[in-house]
Image (cartoon, rainbow, N blue to C red; front, side, top):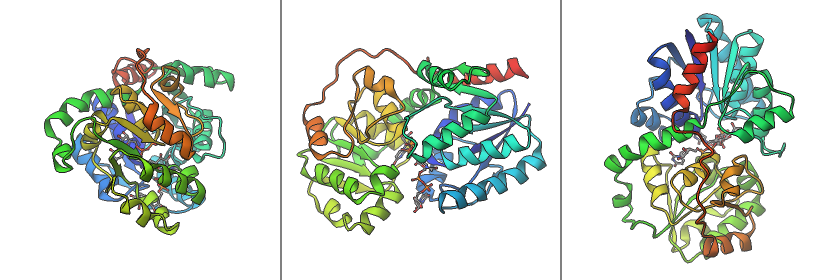
Amino acid sequence: MKIVSIVGARPQFIKAAPVSTALRKQHHELLLHTGQHYDDNMSKVFFEELGIPRPDINLEVGSDSHARQTAAIMIGIEAFLEQEQPDVVLVYGDTNSTLAGAVAAAKLHITIAHVEAGLRSFNRTMPEEINRIVADKVADILFCPTETAVRNLANEGIVNGIYNIGDVMFDAALRFAPIAEQNSQILKRLSLEPKSYLLLTLHRAENTDSVQNLGSIVEAMVQSKYPIIFPAHPRTVKLLTQFQLYEKLIGAKNMTLIEPVSFLDMIMLEKNAQKIVTDSGGVQKEAYFYQVPCITLREETEWVETVSDGWNCLVGANVEKIRSAIDNFLPSNPQQGHYGDGNASEKLVDVLNDLF
Ligand code: UD1
Ligand code: UDP
C-alpha cells in the first residue's frame, strides 16, 4: 500500500516517529513535510535524533496568517498527491498542516486516516479545535487515542471507521525514554539535580497573544521560589518581546530560558522535574506518562483523563491559582492507563492491513 504521511509541526514529528517505523516494515510510505515549523531546533533535530525518515518533499511554507499558511500547504499537498496517487493519506493531530492535508485529500477522493481523532476542548476560539473538527468530519479512518475521543465522535454522529488504538505519543514516550536516559546530557549541561526545578512550556495562542494572560503567567513564574527551566517556543519569545515582558522574565533570578530542546533532552527535563507547568497538549500527556504532577495553563483540556486521574490541574492564566498549584498540587492517585499499551503504531498498521 502507498501511504503519504503529512507532518509539519514539532508534535507531528514525534508522533510520526513510531508510526513511520511500523508502517515502513510493510508498506511504501512517503513523508510530506509542510515546512510549518522550520527552525533546526523545531524540525531538523527531531528527524536526526529520532531516526525519522528524511521527508520526500518539504513544501517550505513557513509562517503566515492562518488562511495564507493553510492555503499554501493545501496547494503544495494537492500537487504532491496528484503526482503520487497514494491509497491513503495520514494526517496527525490538529495543526494547520492537519487541516490542509485532510481537506486537500478529501477533494481528491483519497482515503484519509486521522491519527489523534476525536479530541475536543469544546472551545472553538482555539484554532486547533476548528482543525480537529474539520479533519474528523472528512476523515474515513479515525484513529482515536482514548475512549473519550470515541465518545466525542459519537456525540457528533461520527460512528463509522473509528478505531481506538491508544495514543501514539505513549509509544514514543515509552520507546525513547531509555534512549534519552543513555544519551541526553541536558541535566549535566544545565547543572540540574533531579526534582529540584519546575519545567515550563508555553505557546498556546490564548496565552501568548493576550498581554494580560502572558503578563499574569510571567508574574506567577517570577514570583515562584523554585528554579524554572523554560525551553521557549519561538512564538512565545516573539510575543514576550513585543509585550515588553522578555526582560522581566529573563531578569528573574529563578528563571533559565533556553532554546527549544530536542525530544531526548525534553524527556529528561520532564522526568526529572518536580512539577511541569505547561499549556502544551503533548507535554500534559508526557507529564502523566512519566508520573510528574502537571499544572496546565488553560481553562480546559482535551486530555481529560490526566485531570480525572488526579495528575493534572487546570489553572488558566490566573496568578493565584498558578502559585497555589505550584506550592500545593501533589497527586498520588494510581493512574488508570487510559492511553493504550504502547503499541498504538502497530495497531494502526494492523487496521490498515485489514481494511486494504
Ligand atoms: C502550531 C500549531 C499548534 C501546535 C504547535 C506545536 C496551528 C494553528 N498551531 O502552533 O496547534 O501546538 O504548532 O508547537 O497549526 N516560528 C518560528 N520558527 C519555527 C516555527 C514557528 O520562529 O520553526 C514562530 C513564527 O514567528 C510563527 C510562530 O512561531 O509565526 C507561530 O508558528 P505557527 O506554526 O503558526 O504556530 P505555533 O504557535 O507553532
Ligand atoms: N518538545 C520538545 N522540545 C521542546 C518542547 C517540546 O521536544 O523544547 C516536545 C514535547 O516533549 C512533546 C511535543 O514536543 O512531545 C509537544 O509539542 P508542542 O508543545 O510544541 O505542541 P502541542 O503538543 O501542544 O501541540
